[in-house]
Image (cartoon, one colour):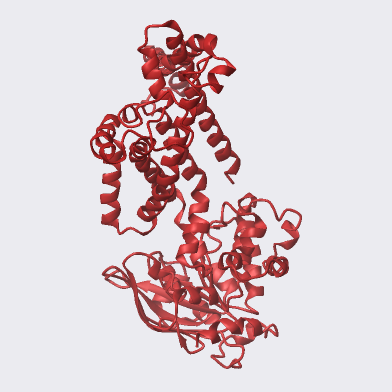
Length: 289
Length: 291
């Protein structure tokens, strides 16, 4: 089972059906392409405080799913349960099931460290390793795991930087510190670092909230391109961004105990134009949150 | 802010008595701070200047290459003794202190960390004479008056410094850096060593140097353990060992001018070594900071 999770990276589908075609076609992808993420009754706790309540959600493979909702509604917490980062916080626990292509990520046989190699993450603030060069930052995941021969590293670094649309800007200065780049470039560096370990899924936690509009646009274009190969889940506060980059949108709100819950999910155009719930309608119309 | 009926011209352009008073108060306050800062550095400069002045006539190559009983008496065995006792103390307490600091910052449950911090802070406050009497009454009966006992006494004083600075600088590493590594699927221990400790390394090194210079200058515990000797003592930890602070203490109490001069000279040597260490770590820290 674990073997399956790590070895399939080699046959990751390059063929790339344009992401738009997936819209609204649940789980009809061929099995070998995989990347179907399913959340069933997920609850997340900080100690005894319930931050996320009973979320069930099917995430389309190789498409972008946006999680939107007001501050404190548990979007980021939910995102962090998917790659098991939530449990790194003392006292934080998760209930329910999260499966990737049918494998329960919280199964007793599944190690959190392995989950994180299959499910990459990009954070709110660009966080390149301050002691490492641009090259070393991209190589970090593989190097810190210590299993990739030096001869292959150059190729991995270049292809990851190309994939993150950063190669042309940094190819002359790979030895400079990663922190010497601009905010937007740093964020693309972090994306390159995340995809260098060849994950199946990319989680993005408000990846543009610390960036200016031009850098934001670049990252958004990049997200669209990456959706051809990766299942992407993005948390965003910016509803325009959700409507621009995502194929599906899930809207979250908070109940009276301040626990986040899923109000509704569906194809992005539907959520933004004809949502089923009036709460969703008021939120996307900007009436609260 | 202007009162009704007062024109903008009056509000902005006609200084009143209280404007002048405020300007004067500003000036006086700034001067007070300035004088305080000057008073604070004055003794330091006076000390460095005076020590240098008194030491220079006695500084000679022979001083640094000969032992006390040689034809041209020198302090070689004291320099060697100080350096090797300090080196041994740091070699043992450095790794333990760093690892302990990492534990407190990264892994210890909140309550354990709080207790650990308290204990270290108490240890940091131990007067060196107390470390000395501990070594004198507990270690010396076992190890004898020796370099071993001297190193052990120094270690008692350096361990909390290394541990506390390591813990503090590890805490300054932003959590987002650890998360970046964990999210790449890097195991916790590798993240801690290769990312967190690596990022905090300049600060950790600063802690080591702080501990080293503290250890070089310690006198009381060495007087009660290593005792001092006129003999050569290179790597001879089993018997009494000489050290620069011991030489300074003993020679300054002597009656002859030559001994007193050598006390000054030894003080200068000790000061220069400590200064060089600090400059070295400053330079390293500035150069390795990636920002």
